[in-house]
Length: 217
Image 1 (cartoon, rainbow, N blue to C red):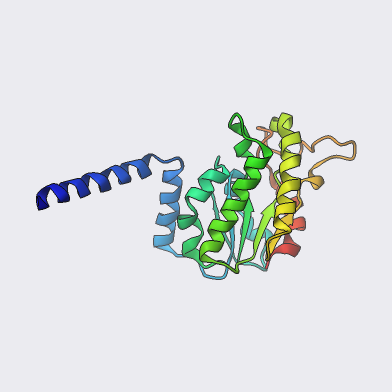
Image 2 (image 1 turned 90 degrees about the vertical axis):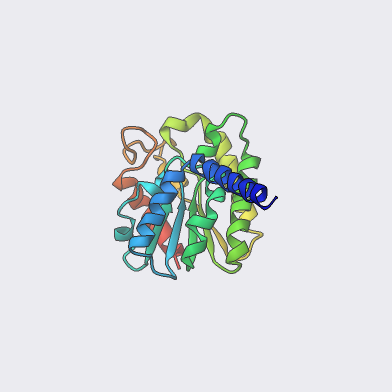
């Protein structure tokens, strides 16, 4: 009987490990853990989490020399993915502040509505606050990427509703980078993006830096 129970436990643990290994972005998270094992980031840093807009900001520390930045964005992630890995990308670091950029990729899944994105953003904040109930959290507006222009109406709605939602939660801030990414004629600035018309170049990040700086702790 004891042997059967041990075998059942082994099979359960093996299945759980297999499921985690196959989870989206598992390898990205393992890479973060490997980095941490070599040199663990300092406590009380500004922690960036979210999707590839943060992942690609490789030199983000240079933009914010007055702050200690830890970047744990992983490319292509949705809010659901980030929620799934909060225990790996937030909980270990004891951050001074958490800054989120995510939600844009959520709209790539058919049927996703602005209200669903807002609910996910709220769940992400609640999950972070479960361990860090007083940590300040900043949420950056979903950006207007030229390659995803057809989704702008939904993104505008989601941004407005996320801003309203955050106004009801203490120690949270909505950082509006969206408006600064348009030309005077109302078109999206294309010269702040890479050739894929999705990810920003240095000029785009410079715009974000000026807007974000006053909000960082």
